[in-house]
Amino acid sequence: MKFTRKTFVAAGSAFAIAALVTACGGSGQVGQSNDSGGQPAQNNKKLTLIPGVQAEPFYISMQCGAEAEAKKLGYELNTSAPQKFDAAMQTEKVNALGSAPPAGLLIAPTDDTAMLAPIQQVKNRGTKIVEVDTALKDTGVAVSSISSNNTEGGKLAAQTLAKLVGDKPGSVLVLDTIAGTSTTNARAKGFEDELKNFPNLKSAGVQFTQNEPDQAASKVTAALASTPDLVGIFATNLNTGEGAATGLRNAGKIGQVNLVGFDASPSEVEGLRKGEYQGLIAQDPASIGQQGVQQAVAALEGKPVQRNITAALHSITKDNMDANQQYFYKQQC
Ligand code: T6T
Image (tube, rainbow, N blue to C red):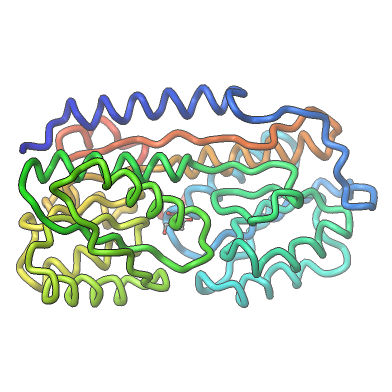
């Protein structure tokens, strides 16, 4: 069955609308922040952003949105990014905030459990914590969390792949990053749950890739060898997508196995144009950074804070990509 522009745009619009409703207070709780971790909040007009990893277009775009908003609100925002998407490396960055931490910390925890203790320590010194993108399992630490609806994004990816494949029977592989990454784990789960609604499609399982494109490429090479009826791949983020495209290219299977990716990095966008991907689900990292700053500042200034904010997702295909360039991620602000 042909993958039509109408299908994707329609699904994407419904999605963006749902996300907007939530962002406007649909499921978020609004309340006065009185959460200072037992100490008075700092009042040094300083914010720090600790993303998941350095020099990666999703987080660069988030940083651009956060910096612009901080400037507008009269705050200074510094970014301190780990070299790899790794909890130990991110813990070093958190610990380096030391005994005089910023007033607000925007952080994308790389592990939903291992990052609890270091973040809690910063909170105990009076810093307001805002989660951007990923989140801790413990919902009592952050004053606010801003994230895409990742479960719904995974479901949308399954519906998209099912439409691409049509009635043909076959297997579908999911490439996740690391166990404990709240976002990609939710995307994989949403995808697997939704896949059960398409009886012609069988799950070939979820493979972890440690968020390394090379590992994603190898997993695809192995799956092509072990699963001759492989008809689709869902890559849960940009690194898994870039690796999957490499694996398909190396095997001469581009276009024969449908690839739906998450995110819209320059390399993924180029891959979509070339036909390596059949669909991308773009997030809005700049808006996640912008709203993260707004919530941190609201908490610091004793204004109402929204506990959960859902950022919009946008479905992009080759047909509609030129009209959706505003959702492509940046390499620099
Ligand atoms: O997909 C994003 C982000 O949402 C996820 O939590 C980790 O991977 C990315 O940064 C893309 O590489």
